[in-house]
Length: 381
Image 1: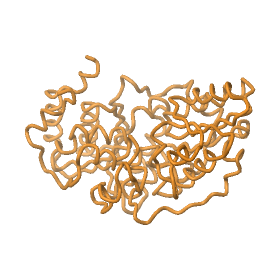
Image 2 (image 1 turned 90 degrees about the vertical axis):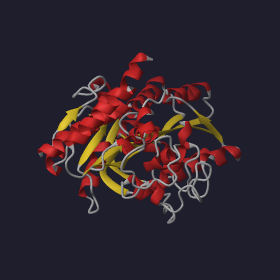
Image 3 (image 1 turned 60 degrees about the vertical axis):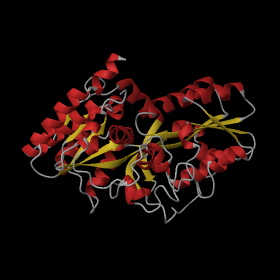
Image 4 (image 1 turned 180 degrees about the vertical axis):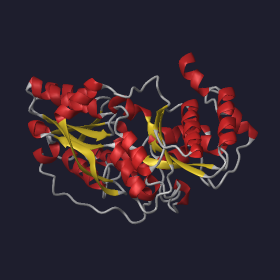
């Protein structure tokens, strides 16, 4: 695994940290948009290794976490119906709806199945022509091409028993919503490399210019993240605000044109509710009229379901970067991975789950990490 080890080298990490420390002369607040980056940051203790001047704010880039409660309740309603095979990625099964989750639906007799690809669900539809097969299509731009391909293939094969429950969201409108919020403290962004590997970087220069923030595309390994931080801090210190690609081994400016064409054929932009945040204009996708027959929300007539978030869950504030998970009184007490109040505690990319998993139970301000923590930058050690 030499290729991966190259991006976990403790000596190189120390050099990058030294450069960040030497560059930062004023307080700067950066937001990593992606939940995968949040988990890497917390797992490797990157936020504890940074100088006092650099603060990392966890953003809303966890697709499971931002799937609105009303969509979860629609999924539960569909999954509980006779004759339905409801397919989902595994991290959605314990996300709480209003009064249950998909695990409980399954325990009550619903045919809920974990799949690894929407094409697995498509194959189930082909093998079970007498059953309705529904795939829970959530995610950012990263998962949209495969979901679009599944619908495209279903139409080509003439499968009338396959549909998607769609809750796709888009990153650039979320960045804009964050920057226009009155409580915003973000001065720069670490953009998600996997999203940009699909969509490219074309939507970000306008945001960087309009809001005067550097946006640096980064990966997910420790050195990727540290290099992204170094570049963002350097821009801030120089008074610059532009888009930089620090993940060139995976991201091209144009993204993946074939994947983008597939998305544009099957989906159209729409307003979308984000769990704990609210409605963000033009922040999601829905099926176009040409593929509306594959829309599970309309097929099963669940468009009228409306919900209210539980008042005791502060996951919306976590997703907006207003609080750290440990600032919520329910964290680790009434809210745990086995009994979550919100999706941020159960998702594999949720900030609350990261803090719980890596034992950040009482994570207060930490000016410097202990020397041993620096050596632990390599997760293999």
